[in-house]
Length: 265
Image (cartoon, rainbow, N blue to C red; front, side, top):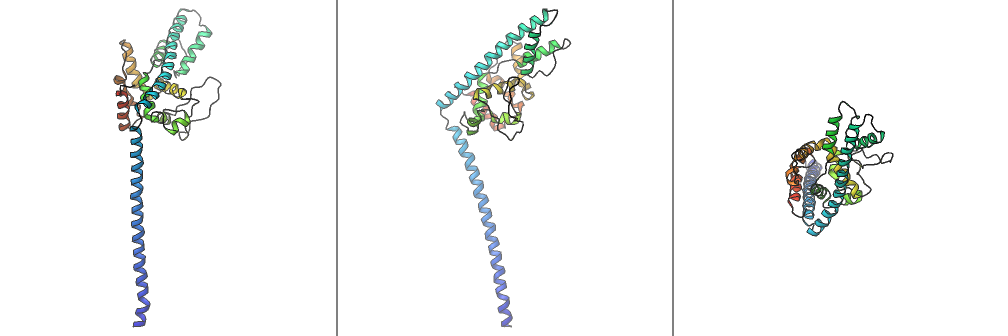
């Protein structure tokens, strides 16, 4: 009997040891998961803290640079507006259409994504659609979107790609605007970074997206309404329409509104 007990006892001890080892491993795994969660939370907190640490001087320098480029692009849009009215008058008064004028009009159609052929039947509605798209975008809105999406131009990805609108470009698959015949890399894969030759090119692309992409239709309709009433809109009056673009989370949109409310813009 004693001999039998000696053979059984070690097995019981081994079983108890195995149970204790399993419990220890389980507790270790749980502890690691908790630590991992804390590390992730710390990273998020640190990133939020870095956003707050951007100095007013850095914000002012960034805002000035983006505003300068946005103003240049808006100046070109105003020139195109005047060109469109001249083309419209000339084409309306001609018994035959000038090939040169038609080519210029087609280029405007293409740039502002009026995806129809110039036709006599729908000409007036086509021109009106082009007018609604060929409008300036308040530079403060451009600054606010760039600041939010690139952490005031300090994001490493933004600097590497010359792209201040990382989230917008990722969601809407924006492409650099290129001249006819110019080759570009295929950026249709949303996993690839959307790279530009310089940051001004990304600003030009963003303004073109606002003026052409279907997600910004509510923005354009509201802007056109101000124009019909011969009123100039303020960023505060129109920023709410960007909610319909479904680009930002509620928290991000609140941050965008806060940037717009900042008098330094």
